[in-house]
Length: 298
Image (cartoon, rainbow, N blue to C red):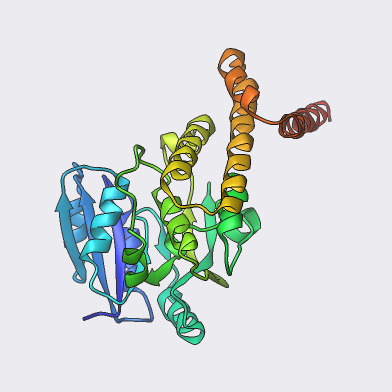
């Protein structure tokens, strides 16, 4: 039995799946299995997956991201589970370096820095979203709106830990933020999050997707927060942080709608926010407008 199960959900991923699988095959650490869950793809995903020798291919009818990730966790046989999205990739020493780091710290949950790539430009993800480690429930609630500092492709965790907290939430009435829900469950269990300050994965942005629509993303985030607040056992201090984050999210969504000239849609969200949040968003908006005007005039 392999020590690490590499968990890859895939849906119509023919354009980039081979790149992800090649990056696993190129690892300097070899004690792994690949569990690829095909979530009802209608393209060449199955053909590509089956062409790789170490892939254990699992097919299911199209059910969504949470169910695909959950099925992958259920099928995993390793002591550790490493996550990789079908459109991302790892650097060759990813598993070797991170597992040694976890062994040294006796870690149950770790994540690393990664490179974020968009339009041919590459930057360390930690420069876009500063990382946190240790007990990180508060940062997950306070910082995630602006900085989602954990990427799926960087995480390795104990399979027993992930299963003990309930794994991915398939009961949630939404199809995004499934990773965030699991990180919250792990943090609520009091688990220490260990961060390895090395870029060992590549996270690709810029695929054609409705997740690139910032209004859609904010609405999904708000829906997720409202669900988590009523279904997860937050202690009183964390409940206060969560309520504050919901207020900030309302203002962020209202400000984004205002920016697009959708005043009528924006009004209900702005009414739910605090005045200081609205003032901060307004200053940011107008400062950006001024900088843009100066660049054009120059």
